[in-house]
Length: 357
Image (cartoon, rainbow, N blue to C red; front, side, top):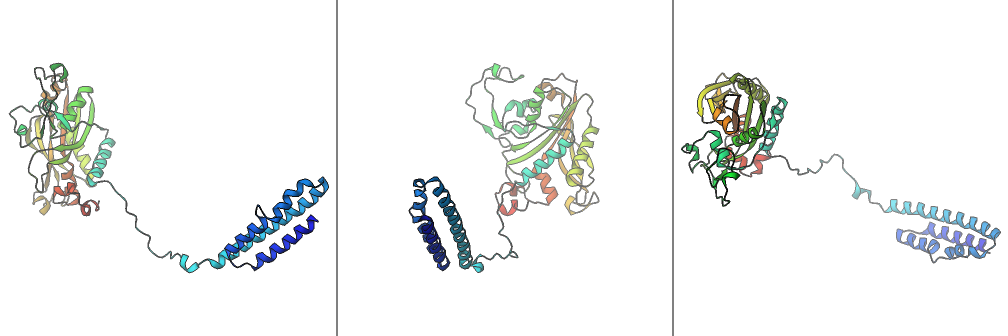
């Protein structure tokens, strides 16, 4: 009878499973007793030939037997795995230091630019941008830098070949009569100010960070490629006092200490009056030390009230608006704060330097 056959299969399976000593042998037994071609599977296939009453009885016995054999197989498999597991080899020493992951990071100049942008935007400034390859008009003419200005000398500017022929209709306002516009790598970020003013009406306040290029010899304080940061504020009654206050607020936030600003008369074609501005020494606080050569002040950059000729070049009526502009080098600022003595380190590609930031 089928019931007896099923009982015999169960007894044999349980006995052989109990005696097995390896996972491979256990897998063979699983196939032998429960596989598709096993005697037990053939019995299940023959259930369709039985009467309904017989099929019900034999089916219950077969299911119970299959469940019991599978349970014993699983228990035996767990037992064999535990016996064969090499706990010593898999042991984890939680006191050992983890392997250090090598991660990339932002360049120090990118970090300081992000920091400066955060400070200025918190004071209501917006960020403006412009092309690094500029035209002669935006880089020089519109900024009141005449043809005979020293900055136009070939030793200061990287001039580029321009094979594109232009008509006077293609050129910006104020360039009528020129048949071909000369192009160059911008020597400062001031052209961004002109481009912004051409499409915006005062009042506004912007910052213009970006890369600049000058054809000059490099040394510990000069580089042919560098980053500049300029600020421009234009309105109906903007004055020098506004500039000095914003400058002191910015430097105090940047250096995380109270900083004073000093203005000295100077000359820039695009501002009138013009100033060189210094900040109180970040090391001694203005008392005098080797860092400031005993003077108590550190030179930072140039500033001034926007020349009305610049406003006219941007399309504003002469005398209607007032504004101030100021700028400085990002490398210079970072060198002051982090006591770096060579500007060439920023573009050297030396990971020993950049990994310190």
